[in-house]
Structures are given as C-alpha cells and as structure tokens.
Amino acid sequence: MRALLLVVSLLLQPVFTVSAQDHSDHAHSVTPAVDTAVSDRVLSPKGHIYACPMHPHIQQATPGSCPICGMTLVEKNPPGNAEVNVNGAMQQALAIRTAPAEKRTLWRFIETFAQVRYPEDAIHHSHIRAEGWIEQLYVRTLGQRVKAGDKLFSFYAPDLLVAQDDYLQALSVSTQNGSRSANLLQRAETRLRLLGLTDRAIAQLQESRQSQYHITVYAHQDGVVTMLNVRDGMYVKPGDTLIEITSLDRVWVIADVLEAQQSWLKTGMPAEIDIPAHHISGIETTVDFIYPALDPQTRSSKVRMTTDNAQQLLQPNMLLPVRLYGGALRDVLTVPRDAVLLSGSSESAYRSRVIIKQGDTFSVRHIKTGTSAQGFVEVLSGLEAKEQVVISGQFLLDAEASLSQLPLSGTVATDHQH
Image (cartoon, rainbow, N blue to C red):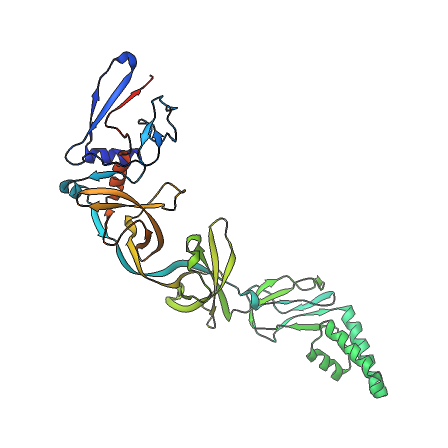
C-alpha cells in the first residue's frame, strides 16, 4: 500500500506547506496545496469517523488520541464521497480508459473441472452364505475385466454339502411317496437357495443326484474388478466382501461449483464435457443430482452428471473440463469486470465500487453487484446506464481518493508529543 501511495504522490505531485510554530509546544500546522493536475476535493461528510493523520489505519467513532504517536484524531470523510480532478494531459499519462455502463444479455455460464468416478449404483459384491475355504480362484488381479457368467471362484462349505445331501434325500422320498412328500422337498430346495445355490446348480444337482463338494460362484454383470479380498485356500465367512465388480458402461462425472454460484444450479441444466486425452470436446449431458452438503475446505458444492461410456474412454479418477449452462439474464445493466473494485467493508451490501468519470472529475461510487459472466458484472443498484466507469488506471485514482479523506479542514493543528 505504501508503494502504491508513493506512485500516486509522484504522479500527482501534491505540494504541502508547513507553518512553523513555537517548538516548545511541539505543535504542527499543515496546509495542503495542489497543482494544476489535482484540485481541491469536494467532500460531503456523513457520520463521524476519527483517524490519525500520521497513521490512517487508526480509526474510531469518537475523538481521541493516536495510541502510536499521540496525535489528536481528526474527523475522516466517509468513503466514496471524494472527487478528484485530473486534467487531460495527466489522464493520458496515467493511461486512464473508460467504458459506459450498458444493458446486455449475460449467459450464466460455469466453467469448472470434474472427476470421473465409479457409479455407485453399478457396483456388485460377491459374498458366500456358508463359511468355507476357497478351492480355486479364477479372478486374480484388480482391474481385470469380466463378463456376466464368468467364473469367479469355487469353494468348499460343509453346511452347503449337508444341505445338498438333505435335498437329495428329500428328492428320493418324494419320488417314492409322490405328493405327500412335496412339502419336504420344497423346504429342502428353499434351504439350498438361502445358502446361495443358484437355479442352475440346483438343476444340475437334481439331474446328477450327487452332491457337489466344490461350489462355483459366477459374475452377475459385465465390469471390472475394483476390489479383490480373497486368495486361494483362504477361509471365508458370510460377512466377508470377497470380490467387487463395477460396470463401466456408464460413469459419474462429479464437478465442483463455487459457493457464490449456487443460485445458478438446478437439476436438468445442460452441460458439456471435454476429454483432452482423446481430443474429444462437447459431450452433451445434464446435471442429474446436486449434492446437499458444502465442502468445508473448498467452499464448493458437487454436482453429478451421468454419461455413457460404452467405448470405455472415460476412466475413473480422470480430471475433465466441464461447462455448465444456467440460462440467460436478459436486459441487465453491466460494467466491465476490470472496472469493479472490491470494498474492504463487509457490513454493507454495497461491497464493490467503481470510479465514475464526469468530464475531468473522477469520483468513487459504491455499487451492488450480481452475476459475473463473459467479462462483465451485473450492477443491481448504485449506477445508471451510460455512466462512464474507469477500466484502466482506476487503482491510482482510488488511492488518491482515499488520501483525500484526511483531513476535513484545510489546516489541521495538533499537539504532537515527541
């Protein structure tokens, strides 16, 4: 900040005259004078804020003394009321450029990045329902692709072997006694199903009339192995998740959206996805879910899009550029984004400001802003159409306007204790 004020002082060349008084009183009288580039400021104070002339960051609502140097605090002008006159030659030297506030159509547009993830509703777990031992493992590596009906592993389970023997015995009795033993046979068959035996295995058991020591487990869907917690000879129990198979025919694309853009989001809004690794852009999709929780670290929320992945181009954990389209804001007053300066005060709704140009006079105007898109910012209040705002050199003008806040009177006499 000191460097910026030094640049301003060098460019605008303020001249100060100091009147000497009795040194025993250690009192100073400072009378500012300005050159042809910058004339007297026109001030209209509102409220009472007192600040130290030597240390402007020392401010309070009541009169008093500076705790650093002991100087009497003087009344400060409210921000945004100072005007600075800058002639044409100095405007050219400061490279000041302006643009009018105009009404235009803003397309609400969010450009962000998204991560490819496994679809949670496309994951299948392989469990057993009777404890036993793995005899033969057919899937041995993570990421291995399988198809529905492929063998995963075979295992031996004593309880399942006993259940098969009971079923064969009930089947033999049913053959001899007919319908009188039908209920017994049905209960034995139900027990096999509850222990995880498939219709195919039961039909094979009924045909062969011989118990199977090794029961084979098959894949229920096409996909890739995303979890493998089993090895040959391992003892397994019903509660163990042995193999996880995830279908990648479609994937989820999870994008992060900043907290300030939450009002744009809605389910069903169109989106586009790019795949830089394959030089593909503009894959159309829609937002199908907006996560309700906000990330406490990034201050962003997540939105989910589902896209087809039949060609297996999208891999989980890929980072992709994403564009979300939230519709148009028509006929709104806007200014260029470069013209808007953020205010240091968070208590007021008018947290942004611009520098207004009227002839050779420049003044600070506090405004209330809305949507920002395509290099422009929506102005909700504080500005009228066709007013000229500074888009280059506004930082120097804003700094000079800030200097004009101290003091109110042309001459300030203070007791300065050394």
